[in-house]
Length: 286
Image (cartoon, rainbow, N blue to C red; front, side, top):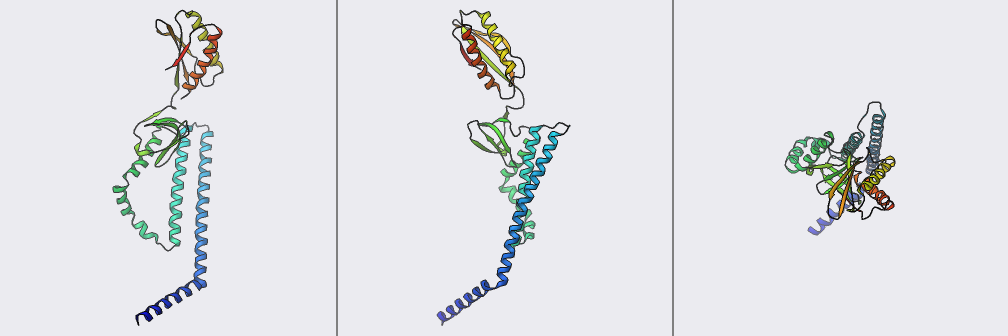
């Protein structure tokens, strides 16, 4: 009897399943639901695209307006607003899709207090990341395009998000740094830099001649070097030893351009000192 009862129950369940999947109303409802989900998804993508275009247009208009805005700060805030827009739109799209699956939104929204409590205990680092990110932007500690040192990582800031800051090192590595862990930042892009060029010549060399060649060479380079912002200063003798005399030149450069300017000056000075027969040159940068 038990076997017959099980067989009958199985047959009944199978028949109900076949009747269910054979019902045109079920397939019609499923098709309508899929169309609605597809429409919600596409609408979300369109809204994000339109919103991002509007942000780009607004920021471009601000940069072109007679009232001057900080381009670094404007670009950074623009990317942050774009991230916020993406998060908000995606959240709304997910809620609407869940609604299509019959998952009621009211209990989810009513559970916001529970979620808040969970955040207080288990997601403190996330909240810290977001708050720190806002302080970084509004205090203008650094912006997109700046060259910074954060802890052990140095590179160009690619993006400042709600949770992480992304920087790219000069060798190509991309570092994602949680905002909440950023405690000390060195920004190399806020102010002009100073290139210091030391040239060592033989002790027996004609010092006056060397200083004149040095001065003429750096001034000539200044006329064509777009990275120099002021005329180089030939300071004269920096150190004096039994075998060599070190001459020092300094020049104010654009932010983070000091290494490039120093390399270019060393190359030009090597040629000039060779042409002037000033012997025993050993360059070193400090």
